Image 1 (cartoon, rainbow, N blue to C red):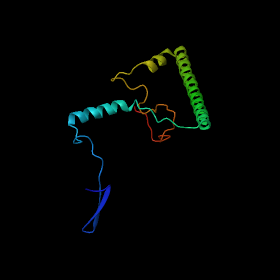
Image 2 (image 1 turned 45 degrees about the horizontal axis):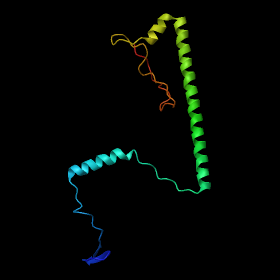
Image 3 (image 1 turned 90 degrees about the horizontal axis):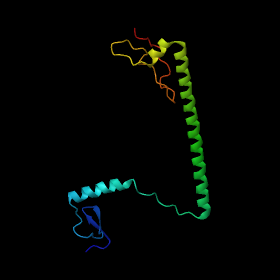
Image 4 (image 1 turned 90 degrees about the vertical axis):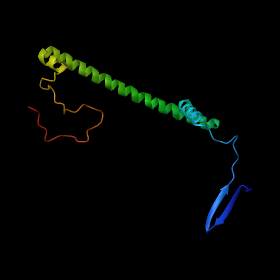
Length: 146
């Protein structure tokens, strides 16, 4: 029998043999059981709790203070964003009302869905506004379709 680990020298190569604790039975699980175990482990993975921090009282107070400050920062950032989106929506709504009062025909064209047979009212190449600048800031060779 081997001790905990044994080193064998055969043909100038070293092999380390380690004896591990035997598991109950043959250690083999049939395919159906392994499949069920895998499915259950995937399902329960989302329910696992993070490791509980073992902190002294002073470190725990610091941790809670930092987390409260971070949550306050995130909530202020979200409020600013919501306010900005609300202002954008109000601006779009006011622009549509002005267009409706100014020129009914343009208002109908702006809100109508173009038929496949009709000429496109607005170019498809027109970039949708986003929060980030475009990778290509301007297309100098752009010519509208006729």
